[in-house]
Image 1 (cartoon, rainbow, N blue to C red):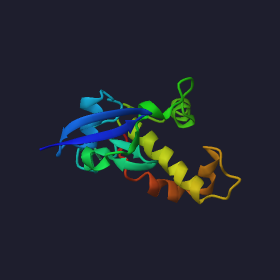
Image 2: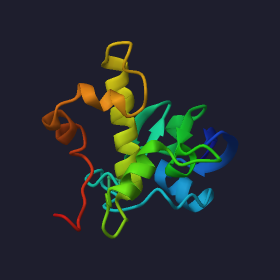
Image 3: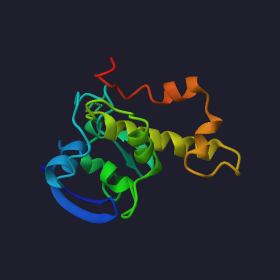
Image 4: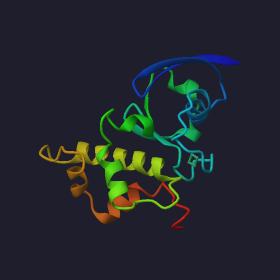
Length: 154
Ligand code: FES
């Protein structure tokens, strides 16, 4: 059966009648042509499909789109402002933070969520995007990024 589903994706409202089994990942890639979100394992194990739903990171291959009626989704295409890259996107470029690049959108979306999580848990003076990471240890960063696999470096 199809289910009417409304989403706000990268600031745009969209509505579909979807097969109830359609994943959020397939809606993004196949219905909205937002192919920056990658399909790696399609089983919740690699993190290539990471997006933000209502500000929280989600493996979009593991969740059905119809479950997100009314939700707000941000993909890698919506992370930057129109005129400049997100600081993490600039950092990945400046620090050569990728090899083939396939996992990079998921890595950046996970890292952005990690920073937001750290900011929420940080003292009130640590509000700038990248200063939030200063409240995390290397071990905490590794743990929080452990759901995102880079096969080049594996
Ligand atoms: Fe979703 Fe791998 S494609 S976790």
